[in-house]
Structure formats: C-alpha cells, structure tokens
Image (cartoon, rainbow, N blue to C red):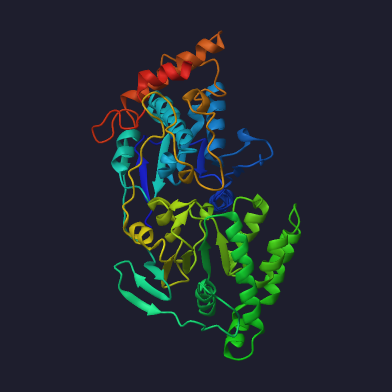
Length: 482
C-alpha cells in the first residue's frame, strides 16, 4: 500500500524536541531503530513504550519514539510545565487509526491539543505535524482539520498480486482462475487438508518468507505448531524436496534464534521452543516486547521464515514478506473490515529482495461471499470516535480487535482526559499560564481547547454534515466538565 503523508505547513524553527508515535503493540522498536540513524549527529533518540523509560527521562532526549498513550501523557506533562513549545515536530504513523474504536479518541484529542496550542505560538515556535497513512480514503477531512498540505502517491515499489483461494483453486481478484493446487503435492511430508502448509513450503523453497494471519491467538499457536511439524518433516524427507529444504533452512541460525528466545527475561515459551528451531513462530499480543523484538529481527534476517500472527502485525510494524496468507475472512465471528484487510496485504513484498508480493485470502463454501466482498470492499472514510454529546460511539465486540479490550468505563471526554495531567494550566493572552484553582484551570483550558477545536477541525464538519458522528464543541465542553 502506498504511504500518504499529510504535511502541516508551518514556519521553520530549530526543533528542540521531536515526537514519532506509533500504534500500540506494533513497531515502536522498529521505528526506534529507524530514527537511530541520527545518533552519529549527536541527536539522542529514545523509546517511551510499555514500561520502558530511558535514563534521564523525557528531558534528556531529542527524539522520542512512543505509543499514542505515552505521547498523550508527555504532552499533558508539557502543558503543565508550559514547555509544549519545545516540541518542533510530531510524526504520526498510521493516522487512520483516529477512527479506531478503542484508541482513536486519544489520538484525536492529542492532535487537537497540539494543534490548538501550536496555533497560539509565534511562527518561529510553531509545532510541525507530519501524519502518514497508506489507507486513508478521505484525506481531505484531515487536511482541512490540520490546516495541512497534502502529498499523495500511488507508487508501490513492489507489485502486489492479490488472490483468493477456494478449495484447491486460486483466483485473482476478478475471479479469474490462476492455478490449481495439486492435492497431496507434499504428501510424503504429511497431511495438509487446507494446503496452507503447501503454500508456505513452496514460498520457502523459493528462498522467501511468509506471514500467515489468523483471527485468534490460540489459532496462531496451533497453526504454528502444525507448520513447524510440517517443515521438520520436509527437512527429514529423502529426495529432491528434502535436499532443497535443507539448502534453504540453516539449522545453525535457527538454533541461534532459539537461544536468543531462551535468554529473554521470561525464558523460552513452550510453543516457540517447538517451532522456532524449524524457522516458524507465532506473533500476537501475548508475547513480551523482548520476544517480539527477537522474532521480528530474526524474520528480517531470514533466520525465521514463517510467522503466524494476529492482526497486531498488520499495522505499524515494518515486517514485509514475499507472501501473505489470510487464513479466513472471518474475524471474531464477523467479516474482517476492509481497513484490516488492506493493512494485512500491504505486508506483501520486500523492496530489494522480492520482485513481487503475493496475498492469498483463504475461503471456503461458508464464507466465500464474505471473502469476495472483502476483496472488493472500499475503505470506510475515517470519522471521529466521539458523538455529538461527547460519548464514545458504541461498537460491536468484533470491531474492537482481538488483542486488547475497549474500556467502556471511559465513555466521555473527561475519561480520555484532555487535561489528565494538566490541572491548573490555562491559555491566557496566547501563552500558557497557571491559576491558583486547579479545577477552574482545567475547566478554562477545556473550554478554550474545545472552542478552538470546534471552529476548525474534525469536530465540526464532515462532508457538510455537522453531526455525522463528529464532536460538537459546546456539548463536548459541557460533557468534559461533568
């Protein structure tokens, strides 16, 4: 998928501090490694995610790579300390997650605060925002909200071949038959009823890697065990298949990956212990940050060749593979949404290694219709997660994701807490100041933020419909004070 940045037009200033924040449970470690290219220039880059806080804390770094939640906390602290003007650049990856029902409201409010305060700073201290997404159908809404300039490209460095598997037949997205899989092609290895192992093995034999997406953590682990056993047997089998597999899979490197997992703080997970030695692992929110880091780095190196993952791997993590297999179009008992599907197939194709990327959506007779509809579905326009009265818009359980829970207790803006750590901070005369009464300070700040946001934002208009699930300034102001 093409990356589509929105670049907020601001005057240049010497940036004293930069933010780069990512979706949770995703690519914080990867983003941190990307930014560390600046280290030789004397720029200190550190990560703020999970329980990790770098030595010296926030005040000692030049670039902070963090989750949305951590960024929100840091911005609130800067508001308290009257230091938000020290931020020079905010980079938002996967900005389409502003519509995410569980965390989107935090991102929306975070950007509202930065935008509101930034507009009241002098030109030389304005805060620059760069927002990026590869799956953003109504970019104009964010462009208007952020007062941004739009940069858009449909260029994809690697061709994507999108396919659907029905039975033993593989079709393109126009339902043209591309090939028939030979049933029992790897019969000497073992039983492979749905042929997912066959699709993985043929990719490995080409010297490439595979990501298989499953709807649940349990499914990931069971399939990883099945694929690990299949790879093990293929390495032991006699004849051409065994010889080719042994050329592709380096036992020494796989043992090194296993040793790294053993030496992680939590020790070796039993399932990973059975699968990693054969180049196959699972990846879901149950892994620790250390385990994720080891697995992702070994996959990039080519030591691990197959990852079986939940949707957490589809967004934010820069972890492409030659082939992406989506095990079913049904997630949580309902059809997967188009955004998740687009993010998953966007993992297919590694620049510099692959000549093309392949995605295969596996369907059966019961979910074939849902599968074809998913392949052809248009992306839903992004919208606020907050309704006109300041409540979080209720969502069905299957829309909430499977590796985190939606907190129904935080169903008002006061819960999201624009002033969570900002008690006593108000905007006065274009500058941030303090008042004696913290409660009054919160109220005045909230009022000014919402008045400012209501005048120019995602919060007032979407395609000319002022109440289409968007935040209404005056109602929100009352809600936040309750």
